[in-house]
Length: 343
Figure 1 (cartoon, rainbow, N blue to C red):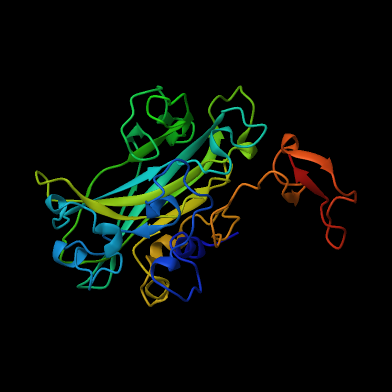
Figure 2 (figure 1 turned 45 degrees about the vertical axis):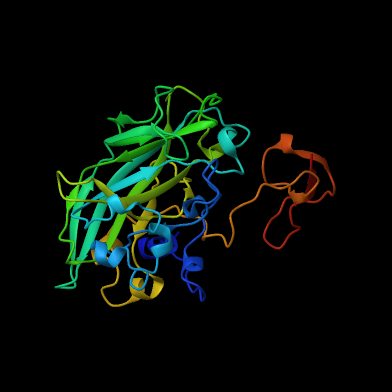
């Protein structure tokens, strides 16, 4: 079970990585289904503005190491940021798509709790803490962030848990060219001094719950992903959105209530994160019931091709042909699981 500190670092960076700046960002658990292939957010965590709230720093390729990810923002949006807004999305991945795993019946939702924001001061070097917030607002969007007004689904307040839940929804998207829509949610603005922001960190907890308590518990077969992020905005009454601060890697939500799983977005490199005062110390004492079972993969998960060999324990029975070998189930010191050839 990973600590908050371990989770926070790996949600943004590959721990111990030595190489180029962009390659140091953690890769998603699975590639974002139907996301534009040219978008860096389809494959990995990342930043655009990052820590740079001043336009003169953010859109300066000599200062902002993530300039390539912010350069496309139009000149009309290149303003100083006086407000930040946390947000989240529920992408699906290419491996499992809208059907998830055999046994999934559509009865799983993602509970969202305890969203908190920490902002580090350049002047004092100290972190200021905001929240907890509820992801109480939002909208349905396509994977490429086109506003969608289709099926009535998405956000729901869960009185039994004291928070909101959401999910991505499969639908016949022939008119839009997409097979599902996702929930894009947010809480409220936080005002900042753009000259005094050294770093930003956003954290929240998720857990799988049932859409219908009387229905089938299919949570172990769901393959929802989740990403946590934050945007920058100009002063109230200004031009509005001025770029994405950053987004965490998309992880499969695996924790079942009452267990929780943390998601974290921050603007630091591994060295900056691990430096004295690098991460928000108060966040390290949050509930440590983190069900973060996987380390960031080196590359996105790719669905096995037809005829490829794979472990018997992977996927559903319908995906596999006749067993190629027999043997006892895997136990410590025993035989490995038998292999089957994919249909």
